[in-house]
Image (tube, rainbow, N blue to C red; front, side, top):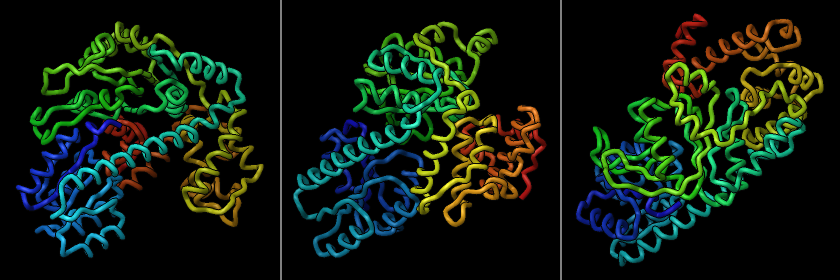
Length: 453
């Protein structure tokens, strides 16, 4: 993470002081924005990525202490540095207790403020690299230990291709772990210490996807109140993983092709070329040959992205990996849900081994997550698997149905439960399901699901 991508929000009702701090930090190479009170700051961070908030304590409308409490309560992963007057250091100490990173006395030399910001930035960069490393190790563990010959062959291809810069296209059904494989390729490549940036092309509307990819300049369109880098720039020196590439709009496909050929981009609203060094990995669950024949995917782009193509087998075709996946997800959820040691009964494993998993590894993960949450006395039993309203349809009696019937039944139940969880909010539900709102509306119609309260 370069400091030019580190976004600092300065919150102070003294505009002159605010502007001085902004200029000094901008000279240091940081990207800065400003707000005059805590309420304006909360609205800003709701719509923009912010890495550090530098805030005064005493402000009208919403003061610094309330801003800090709100940022922490809402779960934003943002560092905070408090600016306070000399006579109010006790307020800064109280803020430190709330969880802020550091404080700065307003009458002090601004060079000290720069030193503190630099220290927070360096710590943030180290923390991010550690988190990336831990996530890679956890995510790839069960892939590296696969017992399936076909999958091991795919991993061998990935290992041999990892240290090249050639484009890789990963194919496979939804939920097979295409992003995990892409992350694995990155983690064993020469770019492993640089960022791995994933982006799902399916979740962004056509009007926003180019801004998300290319970034934009301030004033490029309504609502662009500050300049912002896109995924291409975020991934510079590292790897950009574009998932569901088959859903990329045709106009954006043409621009992506040009980027792959020239290794340059222009932010939306700018004509300045930015040279990039990025490794690209693509993935889709669609048949791109059919998409080419239908006119929804460019043939020249297809030839450009599939220098090496790997197809991840569905979970039903590598059942020998299911026991280790079950163990992995149990251990993971025991930690995340703050549970004690949990054992799973053999008859539960037999049922899970027999199921066909239309949702693949993602579906198995969700099943285990739910069973760990419902487990009692340190055991997962068939009763936990078959709890009413959840997984009672996936017992041994259901295995007589066709795969299509089982898939439709699960999909309907899952959408109904998710819709209820999201308070019948279709937009939120579609985000949780990782599909577009239009696809969700089609599913509601297909399965005759009503949005009842």
